Length: 395
Image 1 (cartoon, rainbow, N blue to C red):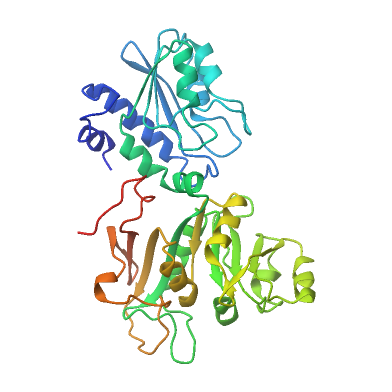
Image 2 (image 1 turned 180 degrees about the vertical axis):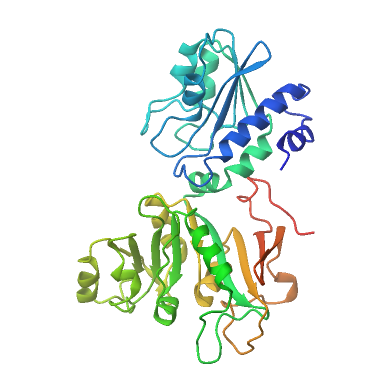
């Protein structure tokens, strides 16, 4: 993505003096820095910052992961000389509140920076314009909006998390060319190639949680461990309304390697809840039932309260179909093998569209090869979150 060209194409009408091409260049640089922290900063946003003085870049920084210095602080520390009269380009409004790290605003004011360009305000109600207000009260010139669309796209997952109180949900499906996830006898190992499975394993490491339904656990007995992760990797979540998953499953046996969250309802028996809860690394979340199943929106809200911002759903068809029916899916990823299975094991079940006009449409489509398989990805058309508040429309 050539961010400077994208930003330049949307300069008209911004508060941020968009006729300044050099400003676009510096903000695009900050956006590229921010992207280096992709999916490692949650529950914080990805942020990049660039400091210029006398027409030269003198400092750069980005937020690497939660708990470490924010981008603004790293950029300030990157400067060896005086900051008096310098200008900062930052992809998100600087924070003015204490969290795991001190606020950035006092450090910016103390540094001597006199101008600041922010791509977008922080949508988090905790900040909500307070940083911009505090900087202006301190005599710093603040402009907002330069490359704002690109900044919102970059932080679409964070935006959904702080504004809707829900994780950003990506569905990943491994299926045959005709949309099936299992043969007539229920077998599904392996539909896609070893190359695709390795790729999917590496991909899990970029998510806070990997979610499956209990039928997938009973049929496939997966591990759902990310490859190349640091620490414990993504949390593994099982949606199991009556807690019928096998106690001897691979997920339970490896709970000491990566945490397991079992989401169940009041239908689960007390003794089984107690048995599973006693396993180190296993957490039970109880959610009210709806039609004898886990009520999905309250379930996702509970995951958000566990600081899960970015969730990957890997099946099965019933769970994916229910999430689709309730408009809870933001992105889709289909790993498609050159096989035809037929039968009724569809990758997406649920109620189904009432008619063709009500079919869910995708946009922002991408197509890639994965060994002998094909990967098709897309965003849910009409979702306000994938595009930072601007719904995409299908072509």
